[in-house]
Image (cartoon, rainbow, N blue to C red; front, top):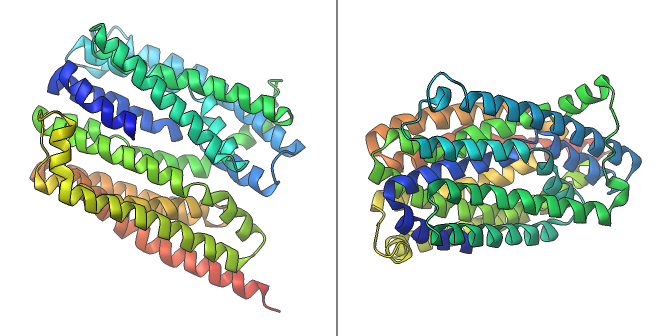
Length: 411
């Protein structure tokens, strides 16, 4: 959060409002990081948590996962290069208006493809109960990214260097993180021996339900800055981008806080321990609501003053934009808890249906409301879609699942 808050005024001052909006849109693609593991990482969390850490089966799954994602990384890198370097126009098939914009998005997409196998690392740490260790690595990545961007701006290297710094440094940190993880757990170190086609297909199938959920979530919520860049005037897009950057920082904090509950909930439900599962659920909801409502209250009362101080009076946020993001944060917090707790095999089919409906509703509502209200419409679209088609139904689904579990234990 600190590096995010510090970067905004620096980038806004050096790049200007239009290039700053482009940087926000390009860097928001890194929100797709949870999507590029093809859902396999979420499967590993469930499997390793149930197997109580290191096991022969866990190592086999990790090895197959790395092989699949390495192949995916090579294939997706080739596709990205062909798409961006095609001869249809000077800027590829995407018709970017400026070469700097083209280069910024090309670098971001390329780094995402290369990072695909490394996206498993934080999932493995989560399943091993090392969320705090992963958070330290995330801090290291954030500080390194901030330093690299600051240096690049001091040398006036422009938009592309700032985007590259935002993407390359996390890649290097994830490599170091992977080295340290497998030194500590050599029995989990992937063996890059040729796997049978059947094993690779089975690995892809195991991650398919999670992939669909992650894809819907990514498309629905991670590309709002890109939508703003296309739907809103440059000044409004920059205002929304600043609000979105603040929201992403808070969302990261909320995700770090509630995600560690997931493996414990998975173990409790697998062992049909209803009371511990219910306790974990209540604890995670309480933490998410206390954090999100406290931050929302601060935003409502001090949001505009803090934004002007934050951006050195270069930009302020309209009241309706502040209110809309203050409403969105608790909705996101509740949705994050429900999504993580429903990522267990018995509830995945229902989660996929709810995610699909909420994602489609959010996307349509954002486009419609953005044309009417501008930036606030994007936040309201997310809140309406998530609350109506995910939060409310998920409450009933989880309650019913726990009731059924309790009945099955009775003699």
